[in-house]
Image (tube, helix red, strand yellow):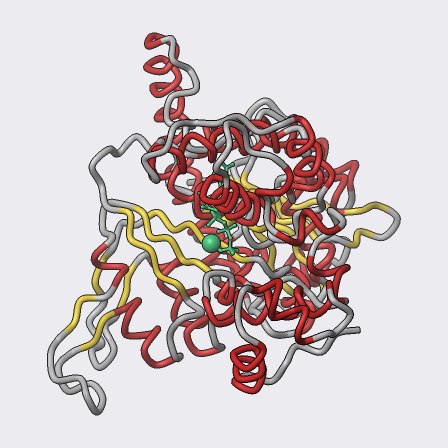
Length: 464
Ligand SMILES: Nc1ncnc2c1ncn2[C@@H]1O[C@H](COP(=O)(O)OP(=O)(O)OP(=O)(O)O)[C@@H](O)[C@H]1O
Ligand SMILES: [Mg+2]
């Protein structure tokens, strides 16, 4: 039987918990930090369940004391309902999970049992990581698998180290960061390094589908489950069995699908829409979002429990403007990529062009840099890529479209949309000519009439 230490300053709660749990666990109780520390030293505690508020002491101290043991227990924190911040803090310090008060004793028992299972899994994972370590060092190519993730800044080195450390585990990973910072690249890298070569990488863009379609996309459906379901369909979870399921734009999923996803993650089973027989799936889930999920949780737009399920391990991608030393590396790598792709010889960037790239703020991050380099490669007819070959927004003042027009940079969905790009260029030409349509048409290389027509095609982007 596993040993459990219950820490709560209220006797009634301690007793209730002990009574509910003593059939399944070997229970110890403590009322404060001092008592808890004594038990932790004297016994091999497998599980810790501690209240956050302990009179004069804090549950965080108990947590720290427990985690400092040579064989730390799996720790669960009890918090008051709705205190996201403290729960986040506890998890950051190393707690495995949290339960909110008032307590549901059945739920607590289930969670503790799951914690035991989880610990067993974790031990297996550590073994896997160690085996991997041996493999890696024996090959002497210690950075193998990380090639597609370019960057040598301290921030990116930290990201790379974290990837190497967590890739071989099966734990769920949440990747957060602004648009274009490389979240998808990280997801692929995690999969490549997962130690299961040849397994599937299945990606789902959660923002692209209506709630009902997303549900059947993820979990599948039986024939006739809803109007239009003429065939039985296997969901992405099942498809990814044995491999990785990448849930992109996870912040966009609706409340019902959040519940289903939570179940799939905690039970490791899925049910097709229109069926109620659970199917076991063994899938490593990686989720990504450019929204701040913690804030969405605080606003009530994202389930707290699902957030914790997803964020077992978190990776935060730093924006490019905070790691400018990566710009040169990235630019040069994109240069050779596009030179090859366009069948041109590789030309270097002039120092002036490089300086422009380094001073710009890159609201669209690496993706925007990549597009700028592609532009330069296509535009250049000289032996070097110079400032004039860079996109207009970089040449004008190096501050970007945002400052030029007072508008935000284009949303990712518009980035490659020809119509949006055309409108953006037209607006740029009008700005450059103080709104003189004849001159703007001249700059654009089209007739004034064509410009008139194009302007009437879409509501113009207002200029400042
Ligand atoms: N560190 C990097 N090394 C090489 N290429 C990168 C790196 N980061 C991003 N890229 C490239 O930049 C582009 C955008 O990256 P990615 O799609 O991974 O961004 P994202 O964070 O998922 O963005 P979004 O939130 O808009 O989906 C891709 O073409 C990707 O190959
Ligand atoms: Mg992405």
